[in-house]
Length: 564
Image 1 (cartoon, helix red, strand yellow):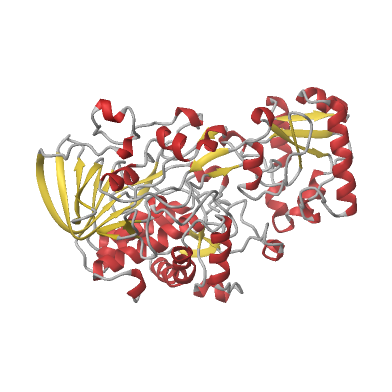
Image 2 (image 1 turned 90 degrees about the horizontal axis):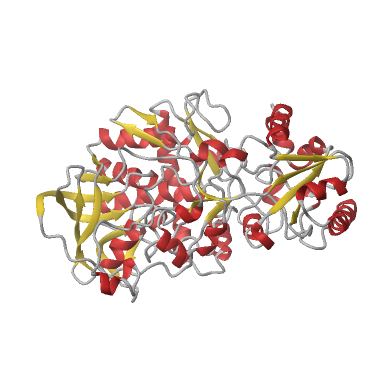
């Protein structure tokens, strides 16, 4: 669960090998307003009008101004791409990374893995088969168990290396810092709600919860560490260049990438050992969102950062070359916040309160467990809902989040006063008045509260099975309400791959020389982004980036690789 409140959505770029500089955070835009471009190349208008962009390959680019030769060409300088570059260059491969942005981009706070020395020393030693099973079953078994098991069983050795690299550069691995990191008895709950403490953060010191002292998200430190090591080992980065087409096809194999550089020239980057696609998710391509993940159009905002760089280019280029798309469905990462709600720890992002829809009815389990709460909200009448709590809210913060009570109550009074002033927090002395302010039926609402309270008093939620610890009866005036909101962060959906992250055809045959990692790697998540193992999205970026980068450099596969 790469959930890290305000800093999750701050972009971070690096210029040069020394340090990363901040990027201004774009305002969250409505999901339906996302950039829908997929490539600067286009198919003939007649054919394209009846097919999706990715179904119609453009004419091959022929005006090549320059050709450059490398062992490994990586497309995308996010967390997955820079890890692949670091591993490839460290193992002697001549490596180049092509990136549309002005530098690398990393966001977030938590990074998930299983089986490291750090975890074992801190008393967490989970069987990787258990972690893989949870993730596989979360997709209704539509994903590739073997692919997931690679992350679960091999991420430990990768993170041992990252921890060692950090120790040489003043960076420490610590338990996850995000406000929504799950501790305490989450790992002992029933399978439906179980969350393991597998996520970590990388710090230099001076962090304030989930932000660095310079205001940047904590994961920028990890990005700097890996990026600098990649550059020190000889990896080259070509920024402000957009990959347009792959060289070769499924039959002949992929031997390079054609990109448009910032001066408008077409440069062909040949790859003797492999092309690694690390181009990110599809959330910025409205055509793909409509086709593969329409539910995300019902979220309140599309908050990918940096905006405009998740257009599904890798998926499109791969399919033009004969690759198949993921066999599992898109897995939207939709979390219960918007940027303007992150300052308050009384929202459904942190707390489990009674949730009611526009009819005044309870509509699902209120556990702060994505995607359960957001899915339910997006299917309510009118797509609107509220969290309801009473004046004993501090009692329930302690009951639900005892390990983080001090953190979640720090400055809370001031935030509540601010929210009462701007209308984000609704307050009433009676349930009838609260219903009136929310414009919901008072009688139905009062009956809903009464039923919920009776189940909370009994310690058993017979309707939606929220555990007793997370039930918070609404009894003591004044009463409060906040709107339940949600944002699309990313939409993982990519190319069909095997357990070695080799891109496959529709007939499940590997395409020589082509790999996909990060959010363009299909078959890992399906239907939803589960949080049984928090930070797994960032964790698979690091793990597969390192494993694929080193395997390509050594001319082998992940399955045969003795990671060093």
